[in-house]
Image (cartoon, rainbow, N blue to C red; front, side, top):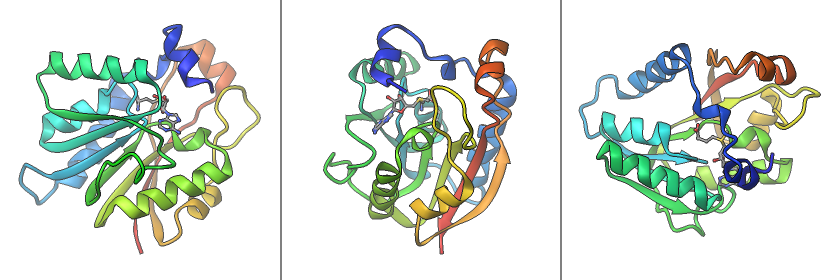
Length: 201
Ligand SMILES: C[S@@+](CC[C@H](N)C(=O)[O-])C[C@H]1O[C@@H](n2cnc3c(N)ncnc32)[C@H](O)[C@@H]1O
């Protein structure tokens, strides 16, 4: 997927999420907050795009850093955060080089709504390594993953590939996201996406 081009032409169907998707992601956030009081601590929104879910986390009481490689996406995120009147740190950088991006460490929640599953194997390994370096010892990683299949645009990833990229982490849950793209994209792409929840072993 050419993300820069996608944002340049205004192609970002992942932003048109439906209520079922929003309910599911909210349920996952609830789980991370259960038994704790706001502020919940540092959260990292990888491939934050226009910041939709990072902003949601910030509204709920997380101290959010969002990172993306596309400057236009970050400008959209900045504008969205301003309108929502929330504080969210936005960083231009690569998820495969988080330490070099200077984002710091100790993140309790690491969210990725669609970056990992389109990276090549070397990039995935680098992303896993970098997450391990910046995550708190009790962190949770939430990864949205399309299955590996022969379809255009998004590469997809199998559970084995997720596990291989995160040595030292355990997949504790795999659950449907309930994401429904417009029917043409559904037919073409068959996303069948799932949330992978990982914790350190
Ligand atoms: C499917 S979009 C999701 C955007 C946003 N998280 C959302 O749910 O609306 C994937 C995002 O990952 C970003 N991305 C892709 N590869 C990246 C990389 N290597 N480093 C940082 N961001 C990346 C893209 O620019 C894009 O914004």
